[in-house]
Amino acid sequence: MNRKKIEIFAILLATVLCFGTFVDVYAAGKTIGGYKLNTYTSQKGSDVKTILDGVYAKDSSYVRTTHDGSTVVNSDFTDKTKTIKYWSGHGNVQGELWGNNTTAKVTMTGSTKFSGGNLEFIFLSACNQLNGDSPNPRSWYAKSMIGASAVRAICGYHSYAPADCDNEVAKEFIKAANTGESVKSSWIKANVALADQGWTNPKNYLVLTHNNNTQYSRFEGFSTTTYTRPDANSTSILRFSSAYPNGTNQPYSAPMPIEIDQMKSVDVSKNSELIALDRMVVPNYTIIMEEVKADTSLNASGEIGHTPLTITEGEAKEVAMNRLNTTFNEKSSLSTAQFSVNGQFLQQEMNVEVAPIVMAEVLEDSSQEVEVPVAYTISYKNSFNGIQIAGDRYTTIVDDDGTKYNSFVWHRVKEINPVKQFEKTPAMNFSEASLLAYDVMESADYSCDCEDTAYAQLMFVQNGDTNEYRPTWVFESKEHGKIYVDCINHSVVSK
Image (cartoon, rainbow, N blue to C red; front, side, top):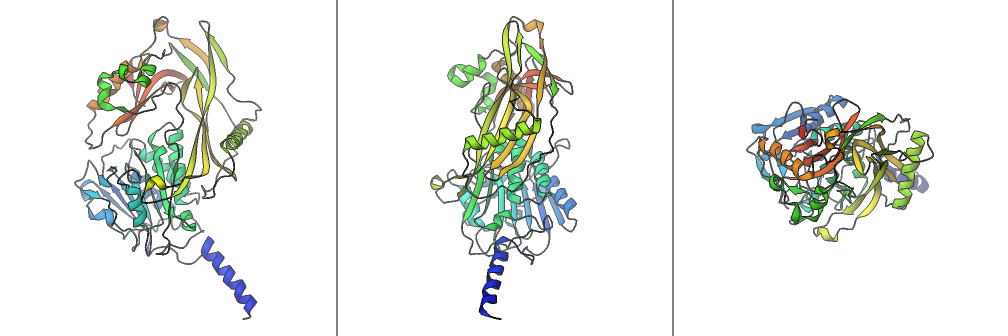
């Protein structure tokens, strides 16, 4: 073989190793273990079961192992015999993990190693495990990924993890992974999808992965595109997360969480933000809505990459709005409807939230980490007279290549129905609603060592399956999920 042919072969081989191979690049065997440390209801479902069943449905050669309650033991946490491990429970910034349905309680440390075995993907559906605050458990997990036969990706949360909607996140993850997207990209999109529906904690998603093409790894059997497993030479670990996890504060919302114990006697006089909420004039009317039909055939898809953005936030918003207008075949914004009730003009409008998806190399001193935007999550929220309409949104993920995600639900106001008993006085205010929400939380049977907090927002919420939307105080907490207080009926309603 002459020298030129040898050089060409070497280039081709390097290309294959860099961008994907067709050799055995996975650990031995297709195994997945699920560990559910918390109790759950059949109505809510188990995120562990959803993940395990979803993987098996895609590839029935996987061997599933489910552990619930007392069947979870401490050694399960450091076990490296499974290729995929999904862990669901409570956690704190000290790296401790536990549950209310098991005696198992484990602690992640700076010396724990997840390399050197079959383990390739870890999911941590628990609070704070990837938190960069002192003592910085995120750096411990990053170190654990370095070594021979290294873990490809760790998916979790840098703050509060979803509790009430963790099973829905699991469903969205399987849906994205089934399309052949990487684990990293699928985890990001799954959490964006639930944040898109109005949940707060999914915005805290974070993925750790290697600073090479391993970050695009799929589950074995989910795609024909494969990547070499990282070895001891892969020592740089990246994190991908949302730069503004709480989004842009909108009217009628409490931007800072409220301690649950404070809700039983809300002292708004000591908090300027709560004063503003309590003084809000709650609408004395309900609204009748009609769904906006749109051509949603222009689906967006693609990997969340690692290339730094060159487009600005303004340019990304223009891309998102062009996509929205194309979807509706309109040249102008949807926010054009104006109405008048008792001489007061009311307007339907869109509020936009922009949250960059950022990449940074994980360091022992997290304050030194440099975040680089790789995409923008842009979400338009539908509102009426400044009050958000629950469930209505247009969300897309945009990078230099275009749109990578697209989700749309929208309604127009057809009619306004004034409520006679509140014509001269406002409906239920924030303080009154807080008392009702607290009573529900206090009566719930939860055994958790976590300090719980709640976010509150006044919204128009659909009344059952009808086309009526009613002013409602929506409280969302880490442990209790969402509680809806109907401002007209002065009652808690179930959803």
